[in-house]
Structures are given as structure tokens and as C-alpha cells.
Image (tube, rainbow, N blue to C red; front, top):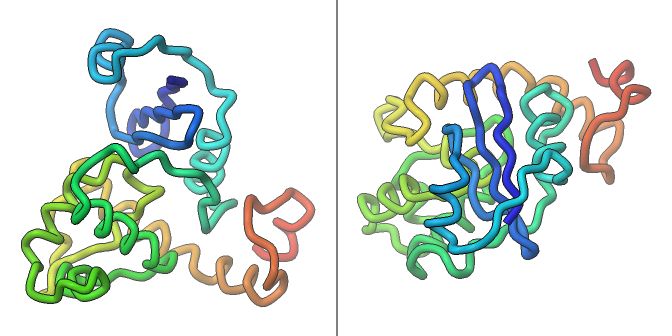
Length: 186
């Protein structure tokens, strides 16, 4: 297991990655003991991970869509994994309601269960649970704290112009905006 804690304007974010992909992303400083106990494996502390590079680019406005393998097949229930996969369909800068999430999962009456699955998302930000709000427009909860959820939603909304300009000028390109491209999008 490879692990790295990033210091960001949202606070510390710890990224956990296996050979199969991104396992966990949370708003804490993780300890070796906690990770080894949880996963029962050796830990390598490194920032040489694609997930760290992409997360940094996202937080700095140079990435709008993550392109990372996710290692969630052994985590959660089937229902939770369906919810997490449905979260991946929410476009950058947009929000949906918990009812919308349940409907996207094919379980329109399971609104509360969809909300609980959203709450159990092991890979915050990359699986964008922050994009789900209450039907009345309130933010609802967030494992990273409501202020972080608000900050992520506001950050994405503020960058929507750059996102759409990139889609128009480079429709078949995804990934991190290069320095050369930055000037044409800003």
C-alpha cells in the first residue's frame, strides 16, 4: 500500500493506493499504525503516485475529470458500490439531490440508503460525493465537513468557464492542463 498525506487549502488529505488503484482518500493525517492495522500490509510513504498528481491538479484548477483506476471492489456492499459508481456520472460543477442519486442507481425509493452509501464513500473528491445535496437545496452532510463540501462545490462552480472553454477548444482531450494550454483556456 502506498500512502501520502498532502497539505492543501482544504486541510490534510491522505491518499491510499494499492497496486490495483486508488483505495481511499480522506481528510486526515493517517498514521502508519492505523493503515497497517486496517489493511494488514506494509506501507510505503510516497508522493510518486498518479492519484496525488491528479488530486493536486484538480485542487489547483488544472484538472476537471479524474482518470484513475479505483480499487473499490472489496469495499462496501453491492448497494454502496452501485451508489459510488452512480456518483461518478455527476458532471464537474453540477449537483444532484439524494433522490436523483437513488434514481440513477435504479432504486428511486431508496433515498435514505443512497444517502448513507454516499456517506460511506471511501474515495472523497474523486468519487464526487460532495456534488450531492438535499432536495431543498441545503448541502446536507459530508464526512470532510460541510465547509469543505461548500468549498469544493464553490470551487467547481467558479471554474466552470474554464471547464467549458477547455471542452470547446480541446473536445477530445482530458487530463491535466499543461502550461502551454493554460494561456488558451484561462
